[in-house]
Structures are given as structure tokens and as C-alpha cells.
Image (cartoon, rainbow, N blue to C red):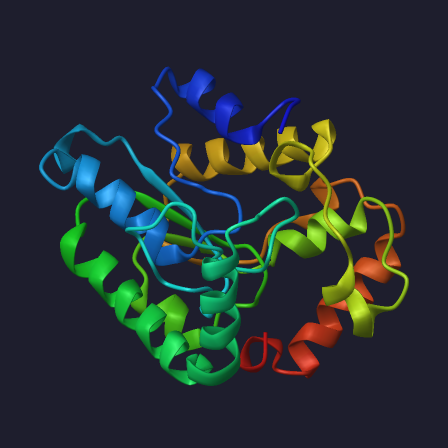
Length: 227
């Protein structure tokens, strides 16, 4: 992904080195294991950790870099692993268990990094009140993919989950990458743990009213219970 990235802007503004652990289509477990392997013995070197939490129900495997975690990607030609993925997602995967595991992960974050400043974003879903209570630091509750989708179109708020993403940096245009960077830098400067909506008016939206309707639909439908 190319273009201006809010993560790079934040690192440059703070004069810090960026240590990224986001991997396209991967599970939260995959990212956490890679991060923890590199940093568990030197947490005191971290200025802050910014999490972007993904779906709970991706395949949680951290030992096979080629295993599809989310869906079958174009060009993936390992027939045996495709079959394994299909069988697992069709006959074995338990989404309620996956959600429970992610909640324990949130508790683990609180336990192992109590003194590291943190910010938490949620890529696709609204966090539950329990999640916001469990996680330490600053929690921004507005789903990031809703802001991304609002840049181009929201044809039907009830079908927003079907809006495709593109290959731009963080799935944002330059304006919204800069808006994200400003948000993070402001939160870092005035660090106040708690749960807050993202100030969406700072972000470009093709049709702001459609964004509001889509967000209201998520809240009304208890979106986090079925995402």
C-alpha cells in the first residue's frame, strides 16, 4: 500500500521509530505473537502502543505464514491448505469461542502492559461496553472501516459491511490519513484513558448524512454481536 500513512506521520512527528505489526488479512493472534516475541523483554523501551483490533473470528494461527486467515486470496495455489481452510471454517470454527478468546486477549493486554500508554482502534466493529472496560488506555469506538467507506460511497447503511476496500494506505485517502495522525497525536499529547467516539467531522466524507445513518444502524442493530 502506498501514499501518506497516518502511522508514519505519527512516528515522524513524535521522533520515534515505527514498529508495525499489522498484517493484511491476518488474525489478532498472529499480530500479537509477532509483537510479543520482539518486545516482551523490553516493554520499557516503548513510548506507546497503538492497536487496531480486527474481527475475532479469523483463523488464529501464528506459526504458518502462508495459511489463509480470513478468506482465500487470489493467487493462493496451495490446494492442501485451501482444503484445510474450507474444512475448518465450515465444520470446526466456533465464532462464540473466537469472541471469548479475543476478550481474554484484551484482559491479557491489560495484565502484561499496565504501564505502557495505549490507544485502541477497532477496524470493523463497535466495541462492547465490556471491551472498553477491560482494555486500558484510550479507546476510540467508531469503526475505522466505516470512515473508510464514507470517503467514496455508502449506498445503503444496512449493507455497509459489503463495501469493498482498496489498496490505499490504511484504506484512507491522504486527508483522512492526516486526520487520523492528528487524532493520535492529540490523544498522545493529552493522554486521558477512556472511551471516545472518533470526531468524524474531521474526516472527509462524500455524504456525511449517510455516514451518520450507517453508524446509527450499527448501534441499533447491536452490530458487534454478529460482525
